Amino acid sequence: MSTSPVARPAPLARDHFRHTLRIATRWSDNDVYGHVNNVVYYAWFDTVVNRSLIEAGVLDIHGGDVIGLVVETQCHYFAPLAFPQEIDAALRVEHLGRSSVRYRVGLFGAGEPLTAAHGHFVHVYVDRTTRRPVHLPEPLAAALHRWT
Amino acid sequence: MSTSPVARPAPLARDHFRHTLRIATRWSDNDVYGHVNNVVYYAWFDTVVNRSLIEAGVLDIHGGDVIGLVVETQCHYFAPLAFPQEIDAALRVEHLGRSSVRYRVGLFGAGEPLTAAHGHFVHVYVDRTTRRPVHLPEPLAAALHRWT
Amino acid sequence: MSTSPVARPAPLARDHFRHTLRIATRWSDNDVYGHVNNVVYYAWFDTVVNRSLIEAGVLDIHGGDVIGLVVETQCHYFAPLAFPQEIDAALRVEHLGRSSVRYRVGLFGAGEPLTAAHGHFVHVYVDRTTRRPVHLPEPLAAALHRWT
Amino acid sequence: MSTSPVARPAPLARDHFRHTLRIATRWSDNDVYGHVNNVVYYAWFDTVVNRSLIEAGVLDIHGGDVIGLVVETQCHYFAPLAFPQEIDAALRVEHLGRSSVRYRVGLFGAGEPLTAAHGHFVHVYVDRTTRRPVHLPEPLAAALHRWT
Image 1: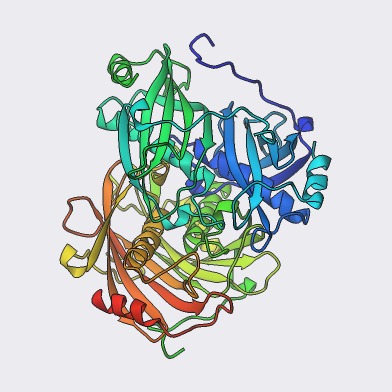
Image 2: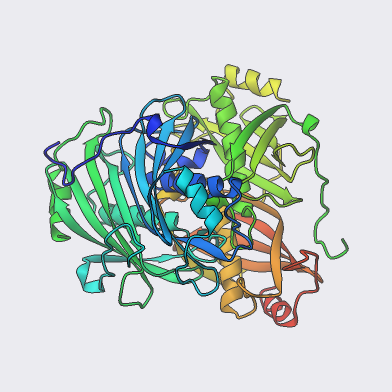
């Protein structure tokens, strides 16, 4: 569209991603215009990334020595989502560094083939106390590698 | 930083922005790691953009014929913020198209000279009913021009 | 407990309720103390009530002539819940008036027999435009009666 | 109102309360019906209680030995609030026990004389590690006593 100030990527298909989580929308997700507020998509980014890591046994958010700090996020929105539909949050690891990981996260209406929105999410792993970057622990790096 | 998968911009000073709004943090803004969750920053983006437009008299969120749909957002995080501190959300118009506008939004701890985070936020204005892009109404375009 | 200023009800079993919805917790639901923030429970109240009505075909949140306004809510908390677990939100109609309905809503950890929290939620149905109370529409009243 | 299943208290005036905090509403506070969602009121309860305690120097949410767990909350809603207005959250201590405190929290539109909503909020203080009730520490009890 000629009026757009930025080049826009296209929606992505489900096979672009490695791991998917079903999430129920909530009443409060819809804003005054009747669709899910753009902010909520990022709550789903956080959720699919952290829950996937916890369930893979490679992140302990309560007592682990290292934690992931978010340094950059971005999202492109293609189609509306709305409560009460359910959505699928899907992830893929796009870049795996020494202490950081960049995910591509896609959000689909349940049953839909293309992303309603997708974006990226960059975690830098730091020491919980000093908050300085550390190398990714081996089990975490191995799990992330499976999602590349 | 060699571990970073992306080039990172630097924090911005207050004089980069045109309009600022003071916002109280809330208990629920802090996440389990003790700082404001990355998602909340986008709630402040929405807030400073829409409140500034409403208070300038150029956006009627309840009955206006045109509404702004968010098509892209992005944020870079530089320093933590935490409840109970207050924050300043600041904006500048970076690009003004025929039917779209791209804002730079900066978030500062109250009294701090540099952004703790900043990002962009792209609104495309559409007809409320058809949801198809329309030209920016004159009063809206004029207000946005003052914030360039 | 002698120090408590209020009499406290006991947790409820699943067979107290008539309809249940599975909901995924989100990263941001946990607060700084590591458990789901008390506020989120009410987001689940809203969600189970409104989604159940929408799926029963008796509430149109976008264009219906009548809408439900919340006039009172309450919750007692018995046991913590925490991301990333899933929860079950369950409801029962406790009182059905001419223009109002009072629900009991129970929240269970997935697979748990007793409520981690439960409370009530009172909707008064009003005309969308005038916001004055109206009699419950017949199909809505019938659906609510099935959940008593 | 004959259709109401519960006796309803009346709005309260500002002099009922002891301490007040100004809070900016956010875009996402409004729900699809155009007013602040009932859930958000509880986020303001949490905020005024905890911020007041932190600023009085009697609560350390990050490292303190004791933390306040919420065991019961309730809210009555009298009049709508809506983004972008600012609100005042006000508190008073209604009951001070050995290990618990019950607050009355009132929410006012900025400049309004009567509560748009008010409710109560019960904290039980527990040991951070064992999560068992403890006596209120002296400085906390003294601060709370000033708000009775």
